[in-house]
Image (tube, rainbow, N blue to C red; front, side, top):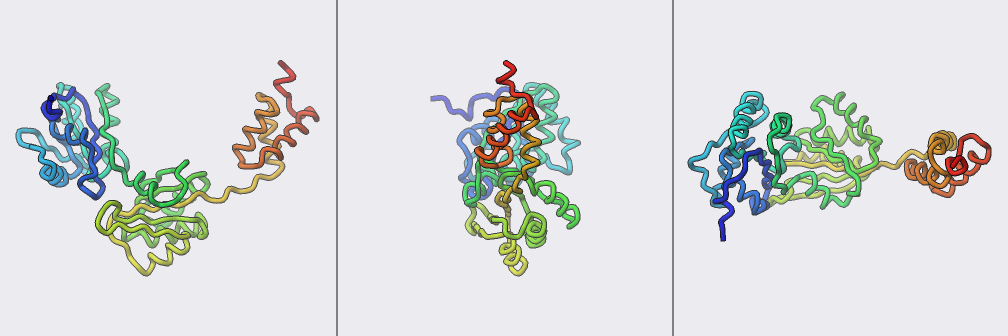
Length: 296
């Protein structure tokens, strides 16, 4: 049987997901790529060396380059040149999946812009890991990354995502957690369900759930440590008024049947279909909007 590590990789950029805590949370394919790539790039080369040592990957004889937000503009052309010359470049972020709140985004985007091959070895992600354990809805979610440091800018950013109909996911630093939760409670509503996930997959992993008011009060007096993901459950949608329903129905009825318009509007506004269907029938009968079925 051929050892995958001895097989030559085709030229391209390989985005390799690495553990977010527990060093064993890495895929076999990721290890194969790290063992076979011509050039290794990492946000933190120390993390790459430790991971390679733990899994028995020989790094000797290959270029090992640091690529991070402070040297990206200078290092990016060199990595792209390596790929253009026919070599394989494996990039790993300090932890988790590259390009997610990570300088690898600019590298991947530049590679694609130059027509170079870009592929992924998927794996650990703090965003997905937190969603799986938090107990909040996962059918829809929005990842907002790190919020701004300044309080005014942070509240403005929270206002921008307040109406998103899904679970909100943020990365946060321990020293800002209390202030972030207080601002989230003020902007998003203190009764909104939330969770703080800390040190996921590590020895001191912790999950604390509650309302934003409860979590803000707790972390105001109990500073956290480690890597943190904050999740906020979807808010209660504003109840649509009769005028809003009718306005949307008029637009929908211009191109849809009564039945389809009712389905579309009730789904968009979260209103019971029967109520919307009755309004659609009335508008159609009054001639406020054409019924495509009658025009056919």
